[in-house]
Amino acid sequence: MSIKGKAYIVGIYEHPTRLATDKTVPQLHAESAKGALEDAGLTKNDIDGYFCAAGDMAGLGQLSMTDYLGLKTRHIDSTDVGGSSYLLQVGHAAEAIALGKCSIALITLAGRPRAEGMATGTQPRAPERPMPESGFELPYAPATANMYAMAAMRHMHQYGTTSEQMAWVKVAASHHAQHNPHAMLRDVVTVEEVVNSPMIADPLHRLDCCVISDGGGAIIMTTPEIAKSLKRPLVKVIGSGEAPKHQMGGKVDLTYSGAVWSGPLAFEEAGVKPSDIKYASIYDSFTITVLMQLEDLGFCEKGQGGRFVSDGNLIAGVGKLPFNTDGGGLCNNHPSNRGGLTKVLEAVRQLRGEAHPAVQVKNCDIALAHGTGGSLGTRHAAATVIMERE
Image (cartoon, rainbow, N blue to C red):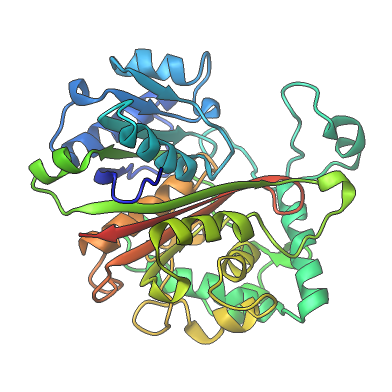
């Protein structure tokens, strides 16, 4: 069974806060849900399916949030695969709607890492419960930044990728962020400024790394019939794919991501190819993340990502593949250190024609959102969603 055209995105909301010292995580979830419901022209009593990653709320996670929001649902999903959770959940919500398990689904994200002083990317990740990596990886104190740096260094060694090429990803994001009043970093930067910024984990500089922000967001999805009754721009999900990549018994190749599997699944279901995509939201935890995912999704040949992103090829109105026109995680927002949901939001804005006029892609009828949750250097989940304007 295919989900193509079986579910529509009718409501979106990105919480404007980037530092939530005066709000709790449940408040951020609730305010994001309210914003998306208002965008769709619905109320909370219309919701019968709720999707929220388990790690986005203390206590019983998704169950606690269902209670807090006062929802009466007949379908729930607490899939948690890090930053790509919400892209998987778009696919899962489309499946549930297609199967009649729910008719109007709500997806929310929220968190306060910045208010809590989290130094994302520099602190070792300790599992909440014993895991296989505990005895073999934790003694070496792997942190998010150095795991991505390891992937970047291998890509540079194998394909000749340069720091200057990776810097173009940040440059493109900054060109877009200048038009976003909510973006944390709105100054346009140059390649030289990126490569001359302080080194965090060789070869990744400070400006190669995403921002740390509080906030959240929400998505409302529903059936084609309900969508067409709401008098909102029609954006339908036409393809999705998901796949994990792990240690594979030690046979690790750091030069590719799980997008090599999730991408083809989404393209096949959607019946389109990379050259049909007018706009791409690509998870940008680090500049190397974007470069590798573009290769793995088929926008260029393996090893050619550095050349592909160079010279402004990702800048709206300049390059052939506009990306992250809200500024992305590199400049705008990376709520709760999980940016997958925001990738869907900006893709929907582009398809609706609601992006900032300076970055709106002309005739944007097919868009892709893709995310990686976990770490390129160890284990992660990849998720791809393809959407179309009707």
